[in-house]
Image (cartoon, rainbow, N blue to C red; front, side, top):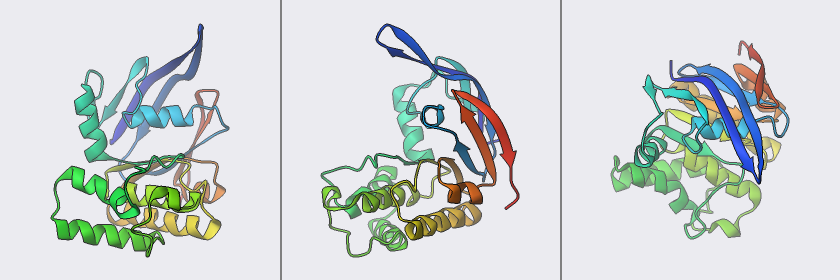
Length: 229
């Protein structure tokens, strides 16, 4: 078992009002899954992904990652987990504005400190070509369209071949053809490198290719559906 989520609850403070975003969430993710979490805006999808990815914390319940309970881990320990374990694709890109396309994608590999300079260069240039950004290596984020920035974000998440990719609406800003190309890259990593993918999405194309769909509404899991692909 890669991931176990047990009785997770999340409450946000909105002024003097408590807003509950998640109610008693229980979920298990196996190694090598290709799973989509779907539901309307405000259903709790992004909140759940942020808790899984150690970006946010719950008010109660537990997250167990590779048999290790994340409760009680320090901020430094969680940062190391995010760096070494996860790849993140955000709706808002979260690119470093002072770094070029190449430097943004290179950054997670440099932080890992496991590869030579030449190997890093090859990995970065390979993924740049795969996501259709060849020739834009030296552009800054503000010189790119929204779709191009999203491709940089996707390349940055995939370049280190993480164990688990958390993707929040990864194809939302991409045209259909580019979205299909990106999904093909993800499916190949899932198949050949056993990278697990967990999506939050409204995209029917991702839902069509997911092997499991988890439906959420009002902070609760409504339905779980396994699909043969």
